[in-house]
Image (tube, rainbow, N blue to C red):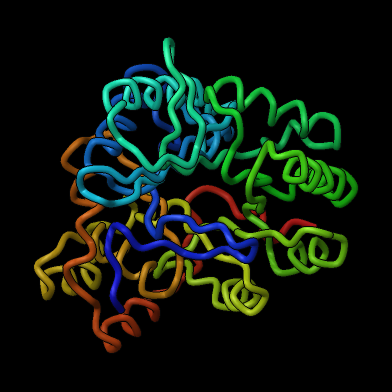
Length: 327
């Protein structure tokens, strides 16, 4: 499997996203999130995720930033949402403005990003999420406008419904809002997160615009074979949040044995496992060296035998929650 930092996945609407992302979930708003985004952009790593979830510290929504510059690679700044626990969307926007202002010479831009003094078109892919408290047709559209304001963008490349929690009526209204936002040019691609097979079937029945992505928790310890196959069979790309198991399994003996075999870190094995299964992983870190290390996953390939061994570690590990089973 030939992959590199320039590799992208084509979505069912024709748009393309980088194969690797960078998450800022639970990254504290302000300097911590901003610096992490700048490091990720500096090393043209992957994508950056800042979600608006319910945890303690941070994230806005998932913003995917893809940038190509001197290294010729793409960076995804993924998710920057605003809700009970992800309040770091503005921090992501601030980092983008600073980075673009200091890299004004870069050409070939696809996303309009405003800085304090200038407007640049940058090759940046931004994804953000609709939070659970913002469901409903009108509220969803208002939430998207607020995300655009905080991120400093004229449009969002990928807008995701965070979860199916509000129930069928509201999530249907929200999807119709996302379809309209796409038609209006406010977003380029639309998708969902934390949707189970039954949620996906429900959505595909009512959608006039097909979801491009389902972002779920998937690791060797939470393989989700049925759900991933359903998405693949219906031309929906699977993204993996928490692909590093939030650190819970990084010292697990079987994983470490395989990592030693390849001369890699356990986290790099987990990321590579996702890539080789056609999943777009969104690793998160606020540490500079780990951000770099998490992008160095393109100089090796896990054998079929070891891929099978990793997949057999499945134990239905849920690091935080599993909305895929909700009605």
